[in-house]
Length: 413
Image (cartoon, rainbow, N blue to C red; front, side):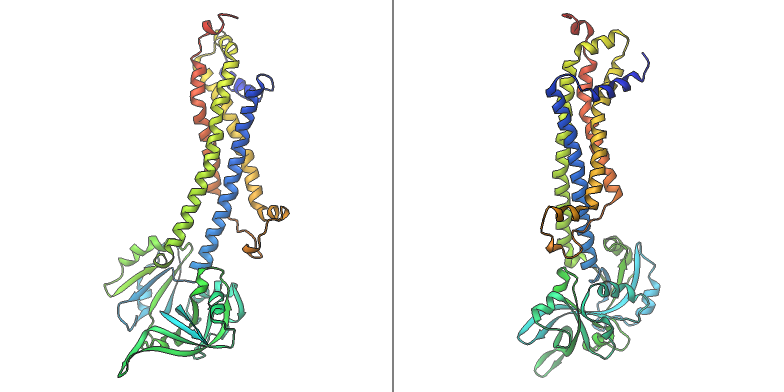
C-alpha cells in the first residue's frame, strides 16, 4: 500500500463525524483543553513577564545594580582612572560615579530610614541615571539638583510618610561622615530643601532620596574629588549577577562589589517562584487535556477493530498503523496548540480591554493597566510543549492498534 495512506487515514479519522458520540465528545474535550490551556498559559505568562519587567524598571532602575566601593572611609580617590581600567562587562550600559550612604531623614515629628544617593548630572552617562526619574517625576523638577543648592528629590511613599511637599525643609542624617567630639560621635547632618517627588510605584519609593553628588560628598565629609562608589547600569539588571565575578577579578583587595540582590533578592526570588508555580498549574491543564487523547484513541481503536484488520489484510504494515494513529492523536494537539496560540496572543494583546469590558476593577494597575510582555521564545516553548505532550500521549494507543491480529478481529464478522 502506498505510504501516504497512513497520513491520509490518520487525518480522516481525526475529522470523522460519525461513530460513537461519546468518543467524539472525549476527542473534542481534549482538543478544547489543549486550546484553553495554551491560550491561558500564554496570557498569564505574558502578564507575569510584564510585572517582572515593571519591577525591574521601577526598582532596579533607581537602585544600584552593581557597585564598586572602597573599604576606606575616604571613598575612591582616583575614580576616573579606576573606571578607565575596568573592561566593559557583558550587557553593560553605563558606568557612573556616585556618593551614597545609609541614613535617616527627619521632618516635623517624623523619622524615616533612607538610602542617600548623590548623583552627578554632568557625568558622561548621567542620562541613564536620570531617565527613569524624569519619566516618573510627580512634583517639582530634577533640574533643581544643582551643586550647592542642597536640594533633594524624595520617593512618593517617603514624602507621604514625612508629610512634606516641594519647598519644605527636612534634615538628612548620614550614617557615614560622623566626627568624634567631647560629647561623643556626632553624625553628619544638614538641612535640605525638597525639590521634587518621584513616583516609581514600587518598594524603592520608601527609601528613595536623591541629591547632587557634590552636596552628598560634603555631607559625608569626603575629600575633594572623592566618590563613595562606581555604579554600573546594565541592559538587563539580572546581568549584574553574572558580571560581578568578572568584575572582582579586576579589583584589588581594597575594593568591594555589591549587587542589587543583597537588598531585593528575596523579592525577585518570590516573583520568579510565583511565575514557575503558575506555569506549572496551567501546564497541568495542558497535560490532562493531552492525555485525554489516550482515552479518545483507545475508544476509536475499539470501534475500528474490524477496519484495522481489513487494512492489515490489504497490506498495511504495523508500522504504518502505528503512524496512522499517532497522526490522528497528534492532529488534535497541533490544531489545539495553534488555535490556542492565536487566542493567547490576541488575548494578551487586548487583555486590558477585555477585562474592562467585563467590568473588572483595574485601578490598582494605574492608567497603563496590566503590563504585558510577550516573549516569542516562551510562546514557542509553550506551543511545542503542548504538541510534544500530545505526541507522547499517542504512543501507547498507537502501539495497541498495531498489535491487533486480523484473524481475531474478523472472527465473528
